Amino acid sequence: AEEIMHRTEKLSVVGQLAAGIAHEIRNPLTAIKGFTQLLKKEDHNDYLEVMLNELERIEDIVSDLLILAKPQPSKLEEVDIGILLEDTVDLFRSEAILHNVEIKLDIDLGDSLIKGESNKLKQVFINLLKNAIEAMPNGGGITVSAIRTSNGEIMTKVKDEGMGIPEERIPNLGEPFYSTKEKGTGLGLMICNRIIKNHGGTISIESKINEGTTISVILPAFSPSKTPANIK
Ligand code: ADP
Ligand code: MG
Image 1 (tube, protein in one colour):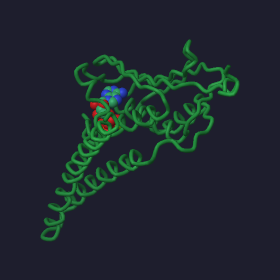
Image 2 (cartoon, helix red, strand yellow; image 1 turned 90 degrees about the horizontal axis):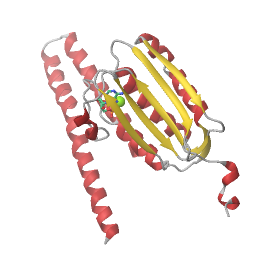
Image 3 (cartoon, protein in one colour; image 1 turned 90 degrees about the vertical axis):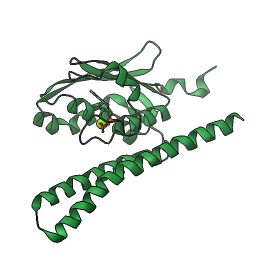
Image 4 (cartoon, helix red, strand yellow; image 1 turned 180 degrees about the vertical axis):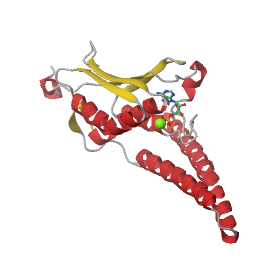
């Protein structure tokens, strides 16, 4: 009985997601159709501008959905979280300068290996860094840190000095299509949640209005000396 319950729950989540997708994609499509009809009669470059914006929106939604649709971790590798964080931060160097944002790294991990899929984990930190930059339209600082907890887990944090999130809105985060941004898809945190859950980890959020937000990601550590064969 429990399994059936899980299945119906899953179906309703998929159904909700499908309804959300249909709604989100229909809006830009309706706009593009309308402006295309107008273009047939007149020629205005501002119509093309709107159409391009709406096409970009569809592109963003579809590429986020593709990440969600990919199957669970299959190719597990040993991932060095410290290096992965450095590489991910490097991807944002030019965008940070452009937005007047300074990104600091504070990594204190001995051997920082975990078992996982590095591309997916990178996607998580890409999404978190993107959100952090977008939360500081006038610039500011981001700190990306990683430590090993007393339980041997790896705890990473992405901390920004941005606008923060009202407490009552925190439960909405990670819901599909929940976004407060004009150009947001509202799928980024849902993707993060999914990936971290698949890696046996957890995500938590702390935030203060006008002070900033810290997103913590806890991942189970993988220690080669403690492979199951060595555990008594
Ligand atoms: P998107 O970025 O496309 O809006 P996300 O799922 O990444 O979608 O984020 C959902 C919402 O959560 C954002 O629209 C924003 O309101 C809020 N949010 C996420 N990260 C932050 C942050 N670092 N600071 C402030 N708000 C945030
Ligand atoms: Mg986002």
